[in-house]
Length: 165
Image (cartoon, rainbow, N blue to C red; front, side, top):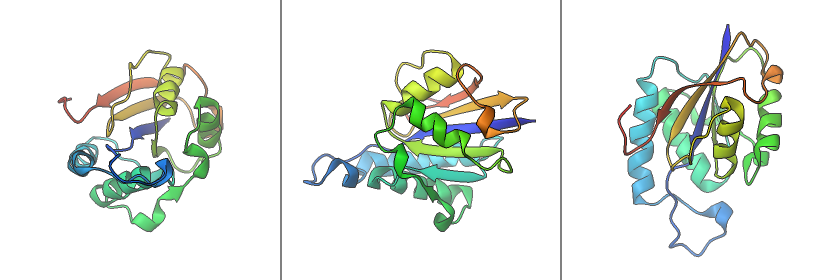
């Protein structure tokens, strides 16, 4: 048995709007890349059973696009306010609290926290998660999310919008 974590950085946001960082929407590139990446995940061998997202507009919009391609009702996306501006210790705490009956989760959030989290969990140096990128970490022989900690994850897949798998 294994747990699967898909860490997904929100799609490209639009800085031309005079809104708070939290309320910044996606830009046209974000609206092009998110569906492309959602389709890649929908075509991938393992699919998330649950989506967990930051409530920031650019993250939840990205999660909603992924939900459509994964055939997950958007009202089943779990909003987690602690993701916004979180560092790896907070992000790991959130992961450790998840329901063990779910084995595969997609986690939508922001940098630098997500890049730092991937580096910590997989004990490797992913230079920087670009917008709309997906990292699949597998945790072998793990049955409880609470057991996940640093260095335990295997980086199975890194998908970026401008690179083929």
